[in-house]
Image: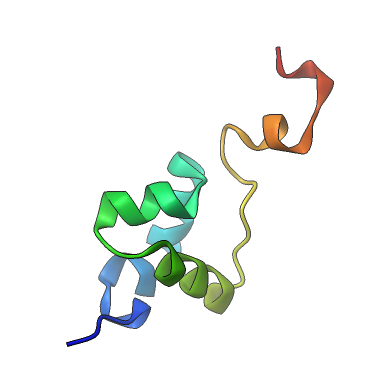
Length: 68
């Protein structure tokens, strides 16, 4: 049986997914943590209107000079 993102409680709940983004940032890391594919995480993020960049490493990814 195939597993879709809406079958995973952590991805179905917007608040839970948003918290995971704040903690982990990367869809790959979130997927490893909850045991699904990164594609499922990205699909759920799009469905809920969430974007990456909320986490503690977002400044580094944007290239801000005050990161060090």
